[in-house]
Image (cartoon, rainbow, N blue to C red; front, side, top):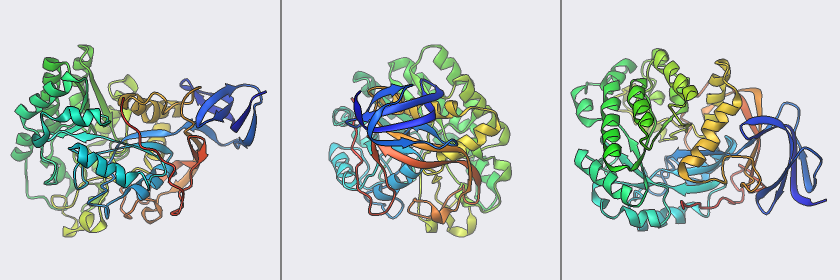
Length: 444
C-alpha cells in the first residue's frame, strides 16, 4: 500500500460538486489519491463530525496595495487574512499600489514585495491605462492573468481610466493575443450627470451612482467584445438591471463573464445607517430587491463567480469628514470573512454549500486559468480547508487579520468557521512569524 505524506479522512469532502466520505492522500504538494478505503500516511488527520473538507478558495479580486500604500494593506497581512478565511490563492489588483502594475518593471517590483511575505499563493493582474496601450502583450508574456481597466476615474492619480476610444484600442490589442480584459464598468458621463453634494445620507450616495452608470458602461463593453471577439470580464456587478443585456450577450456566444461580491449579496441599502461609511464602495450596495435579483442570477448561471473585491484603507480615510459618503474613501475590506458572509446568506435562502464553493473556488480558478486550483481532484494542488459550516461567530473588526480594523461586517453574526488550512499539503499558520510558503503563480 502506498504511504502518503499526509492523509485527510472526512465524512464530507467536496468532490466533483458534491459531498461524500473520502480519504485524501497527499504527496509532493498535490492530491495523489482519493479513496473510499483507508490510506496510509506519515501524518493522518481525521476531521470531526461537524467539519467538512473543501478546496482552498481562489479570490481573483484583492487589492493588497503594496508597495506604496502598505499602510492600507500589505502582502503579509492580506495573505494571513486570506488563509484565515479559507482562501489559498489571491490574484492582486494592479492598483492601489505605487507603482501601479502597468509595466513589466512594476510587476517585478510587486513580485519582489510579495515573495518573501506571502503565506498563500499570489498572482497578479496587469492594468490597461492610456499610457500603456500598445504594450500590453509584454505584461501578458510576463505572466499577468489579464488587464484591469476603469471606464470612470479610479480614485487614484496613478491609474487613469480609459475613454470609449481607448477601450476599443485595448480590446483590439488584447484580442490579438487572446488576453482577458477585466472591467470596472461605470459610465463617467452618467456619474457626472448625477453628481451631488454628498452628505451622511446613504441614499444620496446611491443616487450619485445610479444603475444607469453600470448598464451604459456594460453595454459599451458588450459592443466592444462583439466587434473584436476579445474576452472580457465584468467586475463587481452591483446592478441587477444590467443582467438582461449580459444574458443576451452570453446567449449570443460572446465571451463575457461576470462576478459579484459578498457585500452586494449580504447588505441592502435600506439598512445602511447614516454616516456608516464603512459600507461605501463603488459601485454601491443597492436595495434588497436588487440583492435578491443578484442571488437569482447566480442560481441561473448569469453571474459566474463571487469574489471579495477586498479594498481596504486606513480608518482615517474611511471615517474622515464626519461620515460624509461623498468624501470618505470607498472600498469594503472582506477578504477574511467573504466565505462566511456568503454562506450565511446562502444557507438562509436554502442554497447548498457546494454551490457557494463552486462560485468561490472552482469558478475563479477557471476564470484565471489555474486548473489545479479550487478543486479536490487527483493531480490538483493540495490546497485544503477544514470548514465547520454550522459554527457561529461574531465579527470583530479589530480581531481580523486585515491591517486596519475597518469592516462593514463588524458586529455581524455569521456562521462558517475555517479551522485549518493546508497549502500544497503544508499546514498554514496565520501567526505573524509564520513561514512564508506562498508561491507566486503566473498565467499560462
